[in-house]
Length: 111
Length: 111
Image (cartoon, rainbow over all chains, first blue to last red; front, side, top):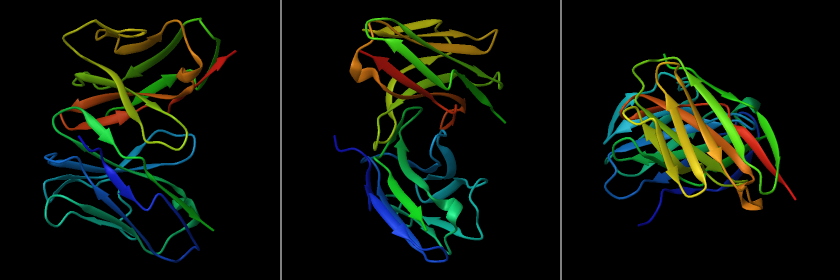
């Protein structure tokens, strides 16, 4: 069974630029998550989708972050404009029931 | 909301010895407690989990214990090996499709 796929793996951008991350969840998983993991900390939930609907986006900085899952499968997370404090690993995950499976992450450095 | 505390933040043990990581949670409604292992440059991987109707679960060298009354749970790794070196995260699920992570424990296995 293929795991959660993410791209790009690494991205370096200047502050105020924009960036987009893509995620393809495990086949058949209705729930998709985007987490932000700052170095030395645990993952923090940004947004959770159930199929193509948003379940929880309470921690998403909506002035600069947006995410969509238009067809209920793939998802994109966008940051515009980026700030220095957005430097982190952006983890996509999917689940069927309780068990959450993570991708390898997209490492963002904002300079 | 749910809050998960994890201790210690760093742990060094001699190869072959045991390692114990402890977590507490705040929401008595939480009923699912997964543990994730994160190696450098990779996403978190589920290594073991326990549900609230069970007090202990074991899988080879890894065991988890849960005390619902005291709201704490622990990860025990016996006969530690170099490949056990990683960051370990505990988590608690206040509802079926949502988990809250602890801040992580960096485990070093000393030769």
